[in-house]
Length: 310
Image 1 (tube, one colour):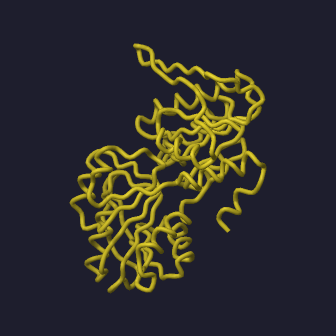
Image 2 (cartoon, rainbow, N blue to C red):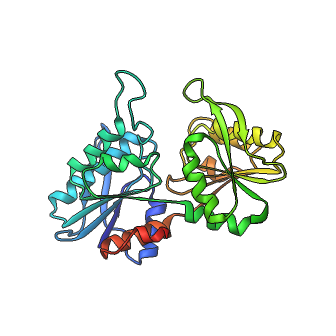
């Protein structure tokens, strides 16, 4: 087994390799003057089980091209098996035709990764589970819920906690966390008038006197979370904390969350935190390195990955 990394999230790659007790593979991923990406694998990988760690986060297209070119380089270097490890799968929100004459970009990206030469994919909390079916190669979708649940147990009195889904579509994810914590579930019903904006309409469930935990897979602009927090507090919640797997946090999201009524936003390191995220007073990052590392180890050993979530 050999583990390599692109430039998208080197801190996470180092932590995963530390868990696995293996060095990060030697590879050069650099750019020519015209910004073309050049990859050179600097060690022998013939017949090896290769894992490439790369989140396709901002700048999404650059990091996606890095991944594709690295996979192609390993294929041409005669690696026995190539696993693309994507802690964050970009383009996942374009998983269906949202209107006439629009693409299904998640399927296109899945095709690109497959055609580049990947033999399997390992990813974390896909925006929609059906994206697994977009790949024509084995795909393992890991869940961050066990990590989030462990953090909740360490920081909250479970007798006073209520898990909240910020929209109807996220109920399955919220129910999974509520089941692990053995606590109640509420839903925020919202109506989105246009992309990037949301209007909270109603809170389904009695949140009076509760420490509410908003659970979702992606936080981008932060508008939904901030509106949901206000609605929950108006309905009698004691505090509102958000647990989100992927902290995209584009534009003015960090500023918006820092000045919001959220007690805390807890995200994972599936996307490398920016300086602004690291310095924000109410944003905390927890690690997925052990989960991803154990999944990589089990894949290499041909043992069960799904049993990680039993």
